[in-house]
Length: 500
Image 1 (cartoon, rainbow, N blue to C red):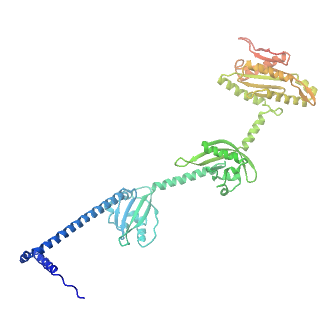
Image 2: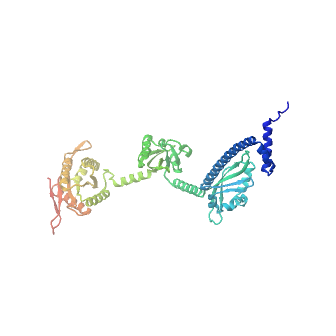
């Protein structure tokens, strides 16, 4: 089919446009032609007006797009410059196209000096091999973030940086360059090293401890132990960690209460437990524990230390044995003076009275001669039991020597001590001792002295009580006598006889 020929109006319009172009080019003859076809000219002018409006709209849209693009570029520039990390960009030829303020601060190279340079010309990139690494990335190598150590020129210390690379794609899905984020991690590395050293130091302290140390989680599981804990339990470290703390004691419930108390109150001191070794050996320990916290203040766990008190128990038992009379179990002569010294110091400090009773069995030699020394020992033991039953909880009953006993009465003046002594004397007189099936009775004489009213020192109060006892003996025995000092210029005199 043949193409349709242009209409008459279109041909005339085409001819008219040709005339207009000639007229615009300076052909004055074309003016006459234009004047002959004014209707066609009006049509062309209308078309030109429409085209002008479209061009104006296009120009306005172009300006808007350019403004938005500039705003985006300004925003990106602000983000890049405000970043605490160094940011640089390179093209495919490794020419630097971006270099922010942080890069200048880290490496001392201004933006205008860096832009346009090859990455190979930048000292840190060249000396650390980063330029070659970026080039390898363009060739398809997979690049992971890495840390580098670099001594900045003019600095006497080595710095550490973390570098992350990302490709810059173009509109054809190709790669037009790369952007590198460079972070100064020097302080982080130093903090990590300090933490590592602190951990090593803490670990060395833990392992240097001779006491078993464990850390316990909130649910009672062991999180860490030292070598001493492994030795104390006989259980390997890997089995201890994650196991129940309470399971290594003879009383698991008590152990549970102990570590829960630490979580509740912040710590426990001298909590007694008995630890079990895998071999069955038992060890008495005192546990001291305190909570430790996370950086946010939350309780992370409990650090507990067990002190083996086996040797201390033995020492205490030995000391206790040394302080006791081997026959009666009462405090002995040496311990009596230590107790009396403590009580006289306390009485003086708090301005409180202190009384001393000195008691002696009447005619004890006759008991031994009549019934034998075993009977005498039985009477000494029986009298010791009687005195302990009659004494108050604060009183101290001692065997002074032979058939002589003492009672230290804290915070007790003569008005209280004398009736107490009389009750003791009467109770002994009423009591019958079973000696080999025979009922034997004894009596005692008691001397009473009070500090500081009747004596100014430990030695004086003992002397005063002894003098009072002597007076009771001289007065016929089976009686209580109170010490009475002589007046000014006189000498000590026998105590008043209080009972016959």
